[in-house]
Image (cartoon, one colour):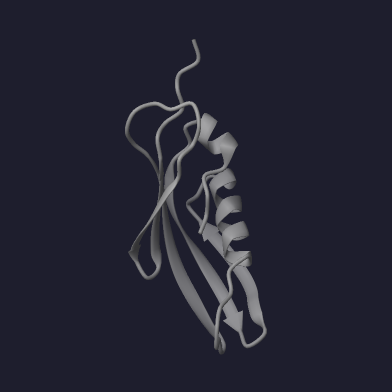
Length: 100
């Protein structure tokens, strides 16, 4: 599961986007992200690359990601990952505390 990159968290970067993953029997062939800030896209790619896909023949997966900040400001990230469906994930954190 993806985390929330520290630079994206401190910069209050949120977003919704997708990843297309091309697979064959040997594993991941290609990953393409769309509509995500580069920091968030990098986290998605890292997460997918660390995943294992069982019994995969040639096929393409379409995955959807929401990076959300909600709740009270915090001094550190406590990440909650919610699986909205088999291919749609919400990565939720509290926003960073404003600098004083």
